[in-house]
Amino acid sequence: MKNWMIGMTLACALPACVTINIYFPAAAAEKAADKIIDDVWQLKNGAEKPNVNSVEPATPAK
Amino acid sequence: MKKILFSLVLLLSTFFTSQFVAAAADLEVNTPAISAIKNSMQARHGQLAAHYASGAIGLTKDGLIAVRDANAVPLKDRGGLNSAVTAENADRNKLYKEIATANGHPEWQAEIQSTFAGRWIDKAQVGWWVQSAGGWVKK
Image 1 (cartoon, each protein chain N blue to C red):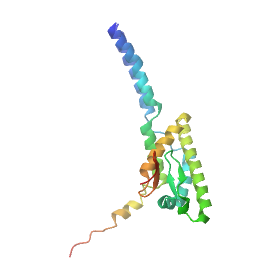
Image 2 (tube, one colour; image 1 turned 120 degrees about the horizontal axis):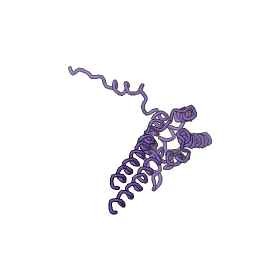
Image 3 (tube, each protein chain N blue to C red; image 1 turned 90 degrees about the horizontal axis):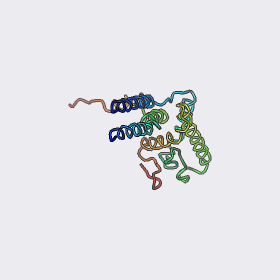
Image 4 (tube, chains in turn orange, green; image 1 turned 45 degrees about the vertical axis):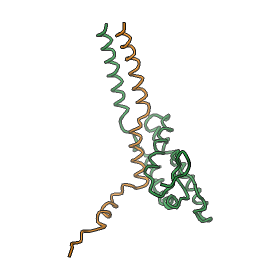
């Protein structure tokens, strides 16, 4: 009887937990937001990176 | 009896796990409507960037933008700034709505908006003004 009740509780509780998780994919939404914001604000501009790297070319010491 | 219950629980968990995996996939953001809004916002950002830096406008905690200090802008430019802010907010609201509908869940719009709100503020440049629970804060 005890086992039966544990089983029933599990069977009811498990889907409830998962249902809350699938309600809104927060991680996927953050990823999507980051992608769009990077595009709109041009935060990941490929043309800018080489400039940053070549700001200080190594100057050999005399 | 115990065996039957166990297999029932196992069956249920398998079923819901597979549903979870399907739902955890990426959100669709590459529709023509979303791209069009993105392009319009990207073009407008050239105009808005200086105003973020001067503190004339700031990022609100609800994922929009607002005029924070109109005095930071010459009188003759204020009308233009106000209409840019209005247009930007219209685009942002449209964007949140489009992402929700493109993924078949129009009811997600508010949550998408609040996710964006946090990300806009996180990614804002140092010196820009952002709205926190207590009011405007300079990053």
